[in-house]
Length: 319
Image (tube, rainbow, N blue to C red; front, top):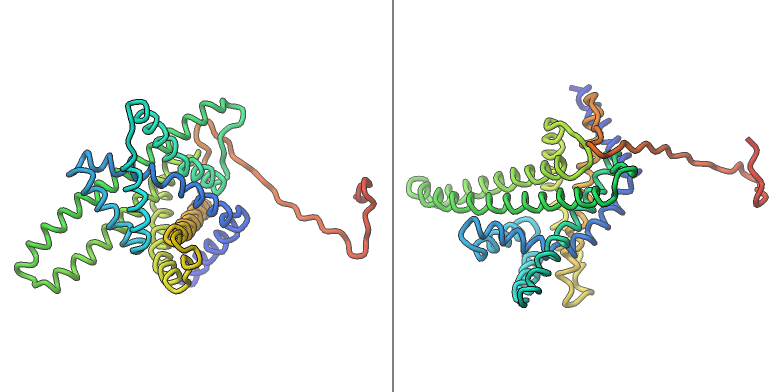
């Protein structure tokens, strides 16, 4: 038991060291910046795909907004609803429609491409610089768009499960009572949301990086990241509800809250990625570069001048 605790502590401390060395807080800020520009096209694409497969855009949008409210709060829901409705009101001719679709796809994949770069850095791989830049660009955009499709599929899963839970509510309520039914559905809803978040993180870790990672390591990393996300979500919500971050920004307060929320979620995701890397090594395995990628080996050295010494500009220090 003591050995297991020591091993877990060693993994966590190593994860924190890697998290700090890779400057994940700064990468999280970059991810949040890209996410704010990619959010509208991602939402539109996800709602359109899920709506086409299940009961229309309106139901898909409502399901998405419900999940946003459950995970991020009322203010985030209002801001995202405003973003979606503003984008849906924009109309144009055939050329504008085609350009709009292209801009949607390009914009939606922007944050995913940045997330790819962040995961590559965490897992110490990168695209082979000797291979074609255009090819790497297209491959990354394709993988990013696949990730957007995965998000749409998960939203569709939420829609289907939401409909099933409604049926169960009516069936169970007849013999178990309303209070028991409500408690049971709350637990089921939490479990379903948690499993979907695990699937989302697993898809990100498996699809996006330029790395080959075993599914067993993907599931461990995705589950731990989802647990961190569940705990962090409560702490972030508590902090945001008492910090009054949005107050100084007036009408843009909801947008500021959403930006802070996305930033903290990005940091949690990157910590989970670092944990996955450390965990894989701790188990005696390696995350290998994928085809067309190479391993990155960096060694940090800190040079300190002796106290009281003065260097003459242009002269090399004695060896």
